[in-house]
Image (cartoon, rainbow, N blue to C red; front, side, top):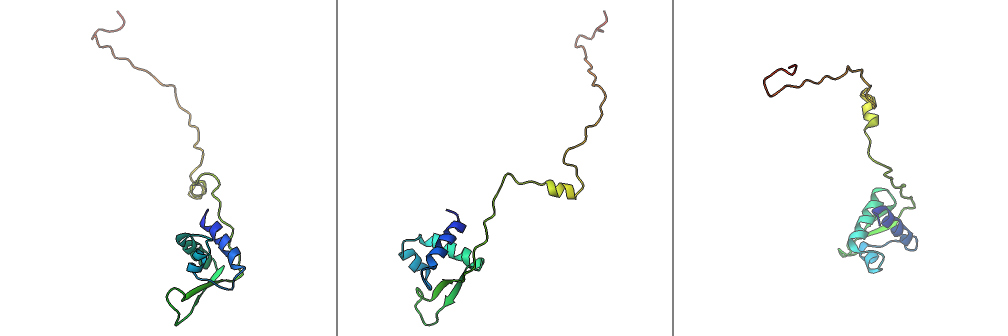
Length: 119
């Protein structure tokens, strides 16, 4: 699953709780430590979770997180290939090069024998 999807799962989990630490998320079996940390950081960056620091608590219980009620933004989709078309147009470079008129091609053949070909 993507980080966005993991954060959605985490926010659904937080709807049933007032607050929790990353170790409590992991202990619940919802996700592993690295996945939980990444999902929490993603949700924090997007304002869906907030950090609560409790002074005097042990290092394990010092930082709690709780939901803010703000929804995560919709994930960006990567439809197709990257394109420079907009940049080329802004620079005035045509996307389809014009077809130039050309004269017929000529072929010259050199004889190895040293004798003219007209004999």
